[in-house]
Image 1 (spheres, rainbow, N blue to C red):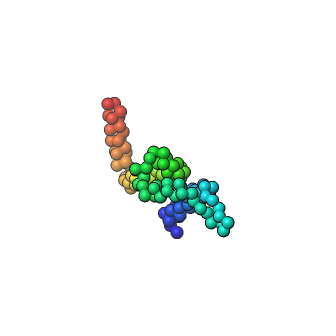
Image 2: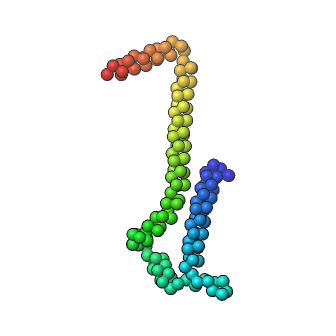
Image 3: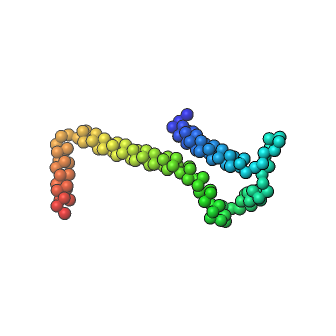
Length: 137
């Protein structure tokens, strides 16, 4: 398994854990509203059935604010993991940039090493003069 696949699997496991907790909480709530029958089945009260059927057929953007907030509460449970993964990706990108800069510096350094010492002195001398000019501005 490569690094990307491993990262995806780890992220899936973190999110699946939250999803399971969300689902279990919903089921606990649902069971608390229902009447338990003698055979172990549950009967959902008609007012809940009507409400949930209405919500099932309603697009999110047309829900009343109060009902939207219930969905937002659930999404906020996922947010810390998603933000953490974004920060980690940004950090890895910065580290990648740092590595590219080091490679560039190493390439430049190796270029200097391959030059005869007189040419190096001349280039450094020119760089020093240019720096002095730039600093005096």
